[in-house]
Image (cartoon, rainbow, N blue to C red):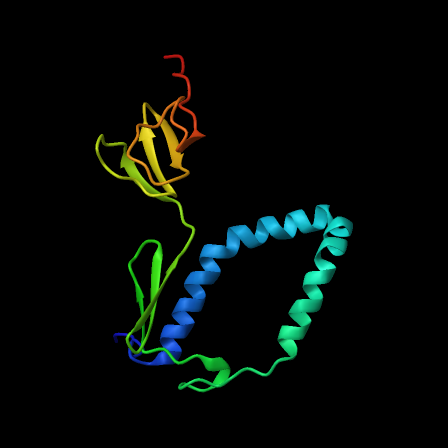
Length: 156
């Protein structure tokens, strides 16, 4: 028997899907922050104290209900392009949110425009784009960082 999928026009389903996509995209960053925090707990505590006061003040402010109710969330739609962009729609307003994500684009092609976060293969090595670029990855290309260096051939 086929499993019934939830209705895509249900705002709860869309908000839950959006939340999951954001959590998955930010998981590696959150883990690195936790590791760094554990290593530098004392220094972080003194640096964060002023910010914590501001956050506590914001948390004390009651949320303003929006058209959909709790916490002002009232979306007409959520669109995901399948790569880096989630677009929230409310009436005529569209809010694109670009997620930090590395996407492998295959072998580098001359003349193709690559976006920040794209990864390509050149000469057996993998490079990561630090900025939007159409330059060829290599030693002199500042827009690219070598992510995986080509290994040596083994003995036959």
